[in-house]
Length: 234
Image (cartoon, rainbow, N blue to C red; front, side, top):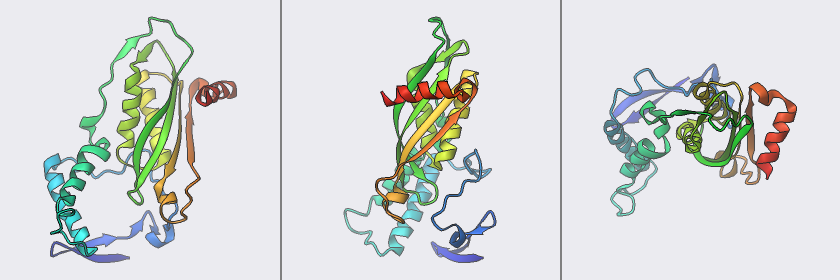
């Protein structure tokens, strides 16, 4: 089923079918289509400045449809502010140019136990409603002979968080990136987060949190997982 939507005087087709399901079928339920963030082949043909200009025009249209007075001093700059925020800040992780550049170093200390970076605060956005996901990531790895700067662990988390996300995908994307960079299978990622699409709308449950995890290599061992969780709780 398709609906016609008029934007800036032009009629556009808006499909509401998603992988065989309609929006009504899905409702508030969770739908994740794969490990990779869904992107169009021509996603980066427009420059960031061109994207901001177009988003500002389209967001102004949304505000107008909602009945807001765009001549008001408080509102007239909002479309441009939203466009800048989308491209330069909260969705900057969509552009591969913003991917952290990571250097590896020899493990000269011969530290062969797990290294844990815990309580990495991140802000993401639910791709189903475009409202915030606020949480903490805990990442761990055992060196295969190389180590990474601690701040780069935070930057990798932030890079993948700064895009429309599903928490399961975010967890796996961080883990797969660490496995690739560190050249090791011994990686673990745990994320606990609050979803505003659950707490501020829909079921309006303000106390629940969502926890996801990824364990590979030595972290598939129950004793190693218990050790990791003990560090996180400290």
